[in-house]
Length: 412
Ligand SMILES: *Cc1c(COP(=O)(O)O)cnc(C)c1O
Image (cartoon, rainbow, N blue to C red):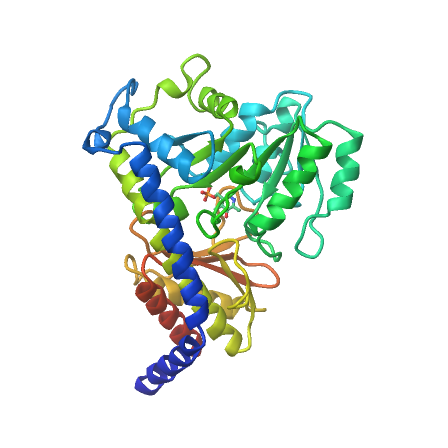
């Protein structure tokens, strides 16, 4: 065992020797983003009073309003709704879609089939509460070679009106790459030119603060993300956000709570301080996650596995996809991440059916917050080509320790 541990240390040390330049760029990006967050705190005069809390209806919650202004500024959006009443990122996406789509409307995904949990929301998988059941149609255009199919998108948008043009940036459980903000900017320009009335909605999960620009900064009307991912900074215990054009954010509020009360209600129950502390920590936590992903990429590529992105490739999100090609290695890797986590390290994760997902999923999330994927986590569906998606790392050291644990499990 001793020898094996030394062997792993050597593999990691050798990999790290080549990562200096990449890590330096990650640190520079984190510094810029920290400055942006701090400026948002200053601009909005964040003070102790904003750590207050409401109960019951949650009227007149100063802290909640301040949180939403800070998020809007950090995301380059006119407005934002940031709530603990969102149970997950998927819930916020569901609210965003239902808030603007009406019977007879069509949504067009220009990044192929959306994330697994949205299939029942949209009605790609039958559900009697889906958008489809309300008479909302869905169409999709696949990506080509990890980029938008600009020509087809233009042709389709010229033929018919689409209420929502939908973009999912991160790869989800697919084999494609995540979409950088430059690509998103290019396609939004096209959509706005051909179909200026369409609402451009972006699933921005895992992409926040990885690059300087944001979807709303490059013209998206609505963007959505989870607070147990990037912007929660490993601090927020739950919640999600929708940011964008004020009119749509107001509509999202009416759908999340009820028509007529909208954003005026929603008790914060003590969460404002966590949301503010979370976004404050987010730039450096995201940097640690990125370094963990880069290290994993380098090490696993050196071991002969196919990885995406490669260690020195441009990144749009904090996710590292590692193709194992067989279920056994995938399972061992995920088990090893769990064994190297802070919480429930002795629990062995097993592939299981999960609500909203079609294949069995194996998931390591030995985290303080249930299901958090910013702390350190690895997961993947048990299907060809057996890819593990690794993400998170509150600190680089803990990320590296989890990776060591995974390598050790694989070598057994
Ligand atoms: C994580 C994720 C979501 C939302 O997932 P939740 O677990 O419901 O928060 C949506 N889209 C993508 C691409 C994701 O990675």
